[in-house]
Image (spheres, one colour):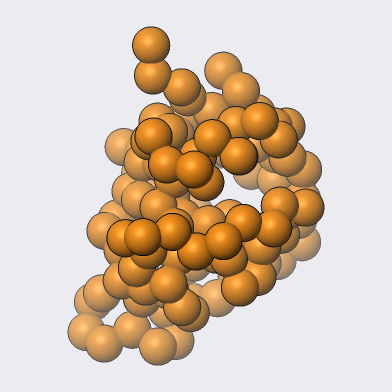
Length: 124
């Protein structure tokens, strides 16, 4: 059975299907994670106590619905549109990130999230 978690911010519940990466496994082992949101263009990120290495296949341009971990900042990243460094309509993160999950949640709803909003990541 595939592992799933939920990211809860305000009234939003983002269901994430975890992949089989080392990052996904480490995140799963460390749940729940509680933090505060930061925004950067159409991206939210939040710091964790994890300190994970960059994995093979890490990337800075992601597809809508991919959930990432930013090794440089020890943060979980959710991109849902243009960031300050995007070219065109791409979702470009600050640097290469490990993709650890995916969601079909309508991430455009993240536009209502503000810096400082509480976030939790929990097993389901």
